[in-house]
Image 1 (cartoon, rainbow, N blue to C red):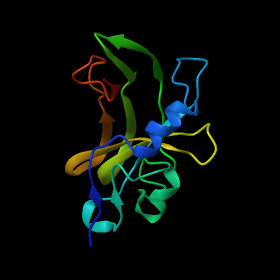
Image 2: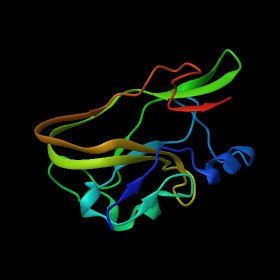
Image 3: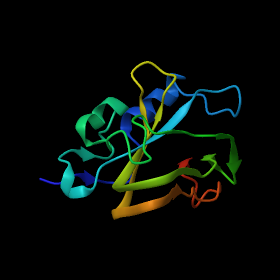
Image 4: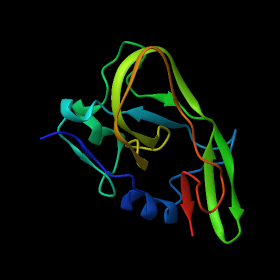
Length: 152
């Protein structure tokens, strides 16, 4: 069975916010990373709202090499703000340079907190391939309707 990815805010993340597990403040907050998943047909897990941590990826994370480092890229946080009545969080775009791989999605997780808890699951809507080039995740604008992490 291939990888199944649904873009979602993990339920465990919502609970962890009430427990003050995550600090998204730029420069003084936690370290957040984004790890990439394998091509859909190359894996077998299911990822979405029930995903609780980076460790859930197990063998479905891209292998180390070909421009990708296991664990993913460290994200640069932008301090959360309010957009109308919605709290929004954003990150600077991130790039894997000189890469050759196929990925079907990603997991944003808190690398500082115990257990590497999941913050967001991202489906790319199908396999995305890069061959001897740059693979970039461009995060949407930090506004109520589009921010990558938002609480209305």
